[in-house]
Amino acid sequence: MEKVAEKNAIKLNGYLMAVVYLVLFLLTLYLFGSYTKHPEGEKLLAFIILVAIVAIYPLGFIIIQPNESKVLILFGKYTGTVKNSGFWWVNPLTAKKKVSLRIHNFNSDVIKVNDLDGNPIEIAAVIVWRVIDSARAIFDVQNYEQFVAIQSETAIRALATEYSYDSGDDNTMSLRTSQNEISERLKTHIQQRLDIAGVEILEARISHLAYAPEIAQAMLRRQQAQAVVAARQKIVEGAVGMVDMALKTLSEQHIVQLDEDKKATMVNNLMVALVSEVQAQPVINTGTLYQ
Picture (cartoon, rainbow, N blue to C red):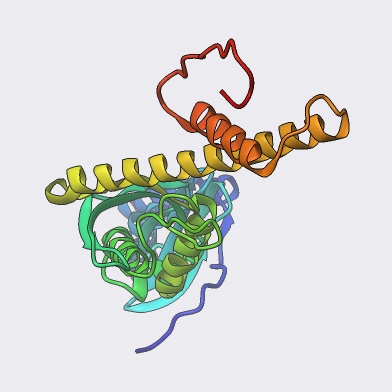
């Protein structure tokens, strides 16, 4: 495939060329009046040439708005791009294709794909992009807007298969817990696919992420179970620390002397009181510790 490199087109100030056009138009009228009075072959030839020039001359005027460009094509050959905003005059025989350089938003459709663990998930993303090379956008791909849409969805599918939806390990990246890292990877994936079209990706971020409906309830129960296990683990760790602190305090301050059996009983009672989900009911012992 022939690659096209963007270059600046030859252009002239539109206001200056408008003055030239007015002069040519008046000259044409003068020659027409002169020929009617004194028909001569030279005047007729000059008149015909000026009429042809005046007819095609206005086709060279173009207006470029900010963040807009026009690609010029002369008889199938790329001659350059005009990016500077303003009123210009270019070769009137060239075809002019408008390309917007403004920032575009593309919101992908929600697609279903399997994650790294094989779980079906639904995912969508918002892609912010713009054209930075008008020539490549026009000549290297058939339709650059459609190309952006298709390649973006392909990159989203490929990325989703590289990571799990969720991970119980804080050190492992997942689609749900590592949003910033995933966004950067997605941006890189899409940019690699769209370089050929002269498109720059400014931002790529996941806008929708969920388990597929057929497994959503099962995964919700699993997440709830994992949350309960993690919470109970924290409670147990805290309770062990509190019991250890209580025993050390009693021993250091000589509040009461406990043998191993009483320590075991105290540890058991404290652990039950601290870990139990039901509020513990105190029992008053009116006898001795050994009753």
